[in-house]
Length: 34
Length: 166
Image 1 (tube, rainbow over the protein chains, first blue to last red):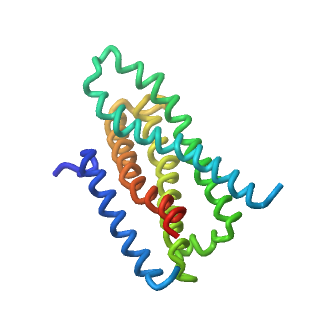
Image 2: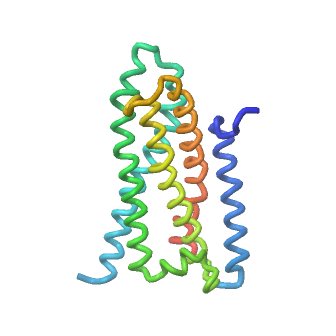
């Protein structure tokens, strides 16, 4: 199976997914904060 | 000089270094790597022997400079500890966000210095290695570089949002 990182569009798509996950984690950590 | 000025000064150096670093990362991934298969064999050494080594010099030192100036900036701004703890100690959104950006940036810089640069040295023939080692090193360098391209997206989201949303 081809490594998804060999495809630039897949690389960008995975970066966007990680971004969403990160935003959710920040919300979980400091959801009620400032 | 005002304390705030020095924080700004290091932010300026941080942005200059970061543009150099990520600009070259994106050059490698969006321009050089996809174009290499299309370049005639007799012209390939121009990239491998001249352009890539020079680009890699600025790339790896800009990575180090970006991390160094970023850590100094976080210290001057008084949130380095809270940020490195990902905001878990104070539940402040800005600290959690910049902390994710900082850790991703540190991982990316380590990737540059400990994987991409050593593998590129083998792939480009800048160090002695078995002839058969070159393709494996080139593939590893590409995948590590692509990993950094992937991580640059959340890293920049964290950096810019920490500065502008909170």
